[in-house]
Amino acid sequence: MKKALLVLSFLSICSFGTYPKQSIGPSALEELRGIHHNQRLAQGIFTWRPNLQLQVERPFSEIEKTGYLLFHSDTYYNTDIIKDALASNLPAGVKLIVYTDQPSLVSRLRNHYEPLAGKSNVEVLGLTYRATDRAIWARDNTPLPVLLKDTTNSQKWGAIDAVYYGGDEPDSALASFFHVGLGKNPYQFEGGNFVTDPKGNCVIVNKLPTAEIPDSVFTEVYGCRQVVRLKHVAGIGHADERVKFINSTTVLTDTQNYVPQLSALGYEVRVLPSPQGGRYRTYVNSLSIENKIFVPIFNEENDDEALAVYKSFGLDVIPLDTEEISDNGNGSIHCITMTYPQMELSDLKNLLFR
Image (cartoon, rainbow, N blue to C red):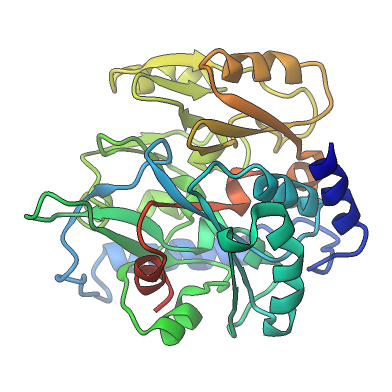
């Protein structure tokens, strides 16, 4: 109770972002530009050179050991409540990294999040880069972690950064700050449209402009062993709206048409209910951090059924009301966060923020 009161007291005095009046997804023109960009790349009209120094084994999976939770400082669409709950419920050994495009907010952000997550568990980074309201989508615009090939039998991590349609990419600012390089995917691609298991099975929704990206980019750049393309049937068209690897044997979806493709991977497929209201609402867009899972709810009758499915796996289930962001911002908990594997903080900084 004391922690809950502490969260509420901070909510009353802290706000770290302006409030958009409408959805901040891509416009029709931006989508056309993305399609054109990816088509020209695939057709060889202009070329790119991969980072040959980055030998990738496979992508990092959310159900593996987590070391860091990262999100942007913006808190509109009631995401201040979501982010405070995340900070207050981090599992032991997981650190919080908050980054902002307004360096003047660093001290205020630190004063806000340290009492929630613990002083030694919080790192706040003030960066200078071109950002808009879309900066909140950390899953889409920050680099995706990958396991590198290593002959010493130890885990070494890298990261792959793609082109983001919104231009809100903190990687260049972080790059100049920490002076370390990233692997590059030159295609326009949103990280929310990428979910993977520890075996290297990668699932994407085959919407445009993602449909223009060859499978070879996912296998050679991200290290995917298999690329599963799902038809875009609802929502934004991101895989993290529709598919959730929950453990080594089970995957969740709310789309019955996806069951055969997911079953072919060797998983038991459990079907979650769909919320009744709002075209962008989904219970699948949850966030796994160790034994805890943060699940979106919408104050409607299907909430309990969805939570029961998650609880059946023995996880510590933390429900969070995401009605406002889902209905207005077209996203949820997974969309506004990014997780990275366990490593030294200096290594993560060198990896991501160079």
